[in-house]
Length: 299
Image 1 (cartoon, rainbow, N blue to C red):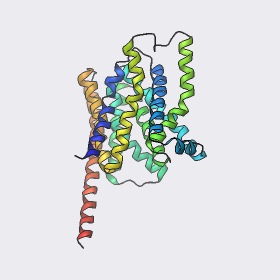
Image 2: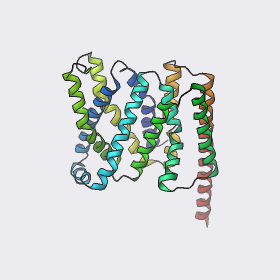
Image 3: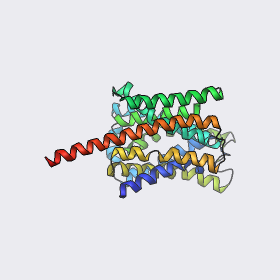
Image 4: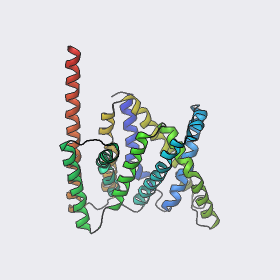
């Protein structure tokens, strides 16, 4: 494994273990966690922008109408994703968050069809159908949609679609997104303080440190991810991304002892089978492509 692989494992591993971190803040309302996370994340990425001497280029870029048009919805989607994830973790739904990130790649494929006019192969359609069947089974058995998983999957897939066509890099993009969310977050936190409902600064030192460190916890894996993306193939990144939901699932079942009934096993299994098919097909296509290139090189 080269440096790129280790960076990717560090990024995805950190994201996969996120539930352990946010669970420590179960006594803090999810909205306050979100507000604090946005503020501290903005401070962290702003410092990184200055240290990397990207300040001038960043300021010039953000005033372009096309940039704002892309990052306003991106900011909204990432805030929905963060809020839903934190609420789910602090209320004991870590297993369902993992389901969201298991089905996210399939939703990303569908968004590519509808918005980027991409064409799907037969196996991809079969994978999507199996995942849909799994969600339908869970819905019928439990009497309601697995809304946490669907909100996380849709918000992250749509966010990824926007980032795919957005003009800024990962660091500048997150800086702009958190900047756009900064004012409403600060206003909300001030209101909490004025009405005596704020937890930050009024509980214990550990809580304050965990809330403040949320900025670093958000920024560091993003830096690892950006570094990995430059060093290893996209196909490898796609495979390694399943570290995230796998770790989340294991944390939910083994560490937090969340219920994993037979019905959930059936629904999850359909999703897992769909992903295995997708990965196998991707692997075979990649191998075929490599063989063709090697033959071309020999000629």
